[in-house]
Image 1 (cartoon, rainbow, N blue to C red):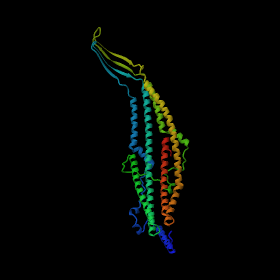
Image 2: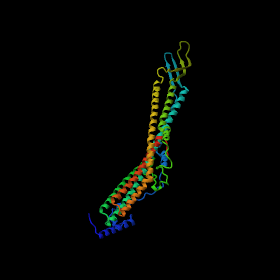
Image 3: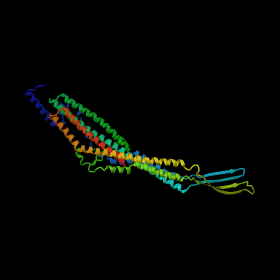
Image 4: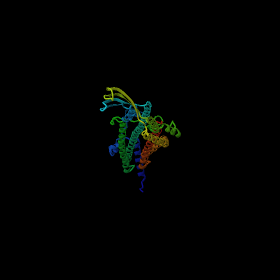
Length: 451
């Protein structure tokens, strides 16, 4: 171990004091001698992103998707297809025209065969069509609800990518500042060149991570813009998460409102069994099956055929040629075909739909429970980060940096504290993502917005 004389110790202390004064006086404005030895690319700090006044809230994005998105328009257009069932129900059998000529008897018959349909058949067909249209409407609502979940996830991806960019931007700035401090202390012969190299490496890594994060931000913004039906070159600006000091004064749709407690698990389970669109679809299929069964029963008796027309006989057994008319009725008897195949199919479908309803109820209960518990855990984790973890992490990182400037900490502990602080903020963003994903899953499970 090297030994130092009194003069050497006093000289090292003086240099240390000078380095600390230089660092404290100006961290962001390096000395010319220091600046000349640092890579200019690392010296350029990223500019603060201007606060956009055109940032769209999550609710506004939902509204624009429903109105302008081609995906929503495609789903709504399906209702017109289902409404054609009314036109089909109002379709009646076509009459038949016939012409008969008997050359042996010199007889001719010209007339028409008109089907006579019972009015009850029309009534049951209209009821069946109404049930089909209602089923299509519920399925459209289900698909629009799924589109809403996709838009919410896309919006969240943009917000998280934006927040990650800001966090990595902060890391880059801190790394550059630490590099400046390390260079000053090295010039003051207070630390080894090793500290400068490590600080430079940390700065370059932060710069590379930031560039990758900016690419991810571009991708998520363009994706959300396309979903909304806009030109992908005109990206959508989203709201940001409030900073730690704003958490109590700024409301945000992406963060939980801790002033409102979560409903009980029993409440949300019952809510899901009542409002879940998947259940409504199965229930409406059962109703459509019943309507189809009644319509099939009504069509067991075939339509009566009314035959009417004029007749001419030019060679009767006695007397001159005669002219007249004829009228008759033809009735098909349902002896061999009484819709037994269709009735058997509808009965089997009814049994399957009844079991599908119970299975869907079981699935809904499971999904609600899982999503609720995940939401409760994520909500608690976000609250812990906001109240305790984030402020403490910022304090520790700030103390480590000041300690390094004063020569009380080494580079290893300072970098570790700085990286731990950034990792804490990234973990906080992950907890917000988990909260939003759990909230989306729970809303999908119960079939309507929760908060």
